[in-house]
Image 1 (cartoon, helix red, strand yellow):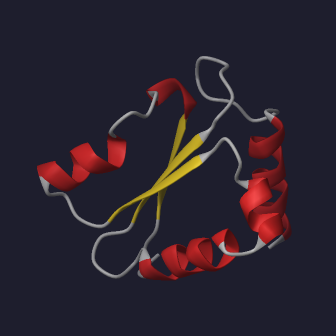
Image 2 (tube, one colour):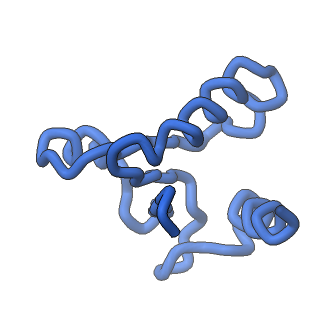
Length: 93
């Protein structure tokens, strides 16, 4: 948990940036099948909390649950690759 908390704080502060040096403002969480559901439930719960909403201000979180081209297009629409962190979620790792 401490390593996740440290990484998250570094991303939010801009200390950890993308390959081109731009701050990461977007996250695409890829979890095929049901792997993404836990993360999506937590994101929804935090979004209903005032502090959670404030912490996500100016950021976008998208979930990609399959490799269907339409789903991929929707998940990536409007995101700048230089400002996007991709996280792979798996129940089998």
